[in-house]
Image 1 (cartoon, one colour):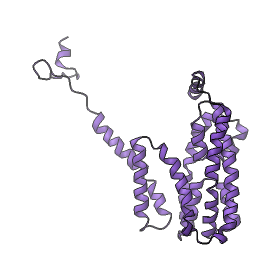
Image 2 (cartoon, rainbow, N blue to C red; image 1 turned 180 degrees about the vertical axis):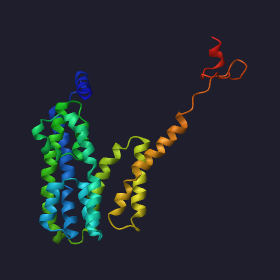
Image 3 (cartoon, rainbow, N blue to C red; image 1 turned 120 degrees about the horizontal axis):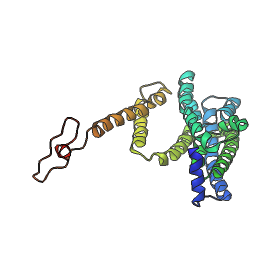
Image 4 (tube, rainbow, N blue to C red; image 1 turned 180 degrees about the horizontal axis):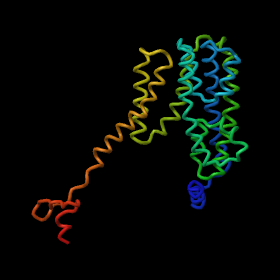
Length: 269
């Protein structure tokens, strides 16, 4: 209800966005990110997965960060279960996106299972940037459709062309997906806590990479969020728990407090 009122207010204030502009922005994101599916296809084939396995990952999983984490861990010789666990935990964030988008889009119940497949970083970013529900639905649909189609097509082309390209590490294609993900994530880190979580996750992941099996540093990096939140709550408890002192009187001394917490000057009134 609150979301509906907010969207109505934005429209009333003249924040409505032309459909053509929404489609243009959504296609821009879909095409730009969809092309990196080629890098995933090449990387997946280079890690030892077959053509059908590679295409199935893009068709069924369809979350680039999780897909790259899985094939990256396998390529490094990691345990398949550990690699799958790392990919799973990276994909859990999409469930939280879905909670937000379900209220914003308010889609019919019959199409929600299909729309859930498109709940990823890019569709969420485009949807949340829209001022009205109509624009949000258009942005979500166009981004999801264009990205899903192009990502799967380029995955197929990348897997087919992997043998012609040769060593994917020499081309640096295995870093294309994570680079796109970081480019989308960076502008969203607006608060000090969010930046602290991201920075701590990077330190944990890179620091533990040489000493832990492939795929495990990704799981350990997830501890950055609770650690940063605990540190923030402790800092808030130290700074926000004390009552402010009374201003000093004309003689420069502060009035003593009574038993109920009021100052002497208040008790005298």
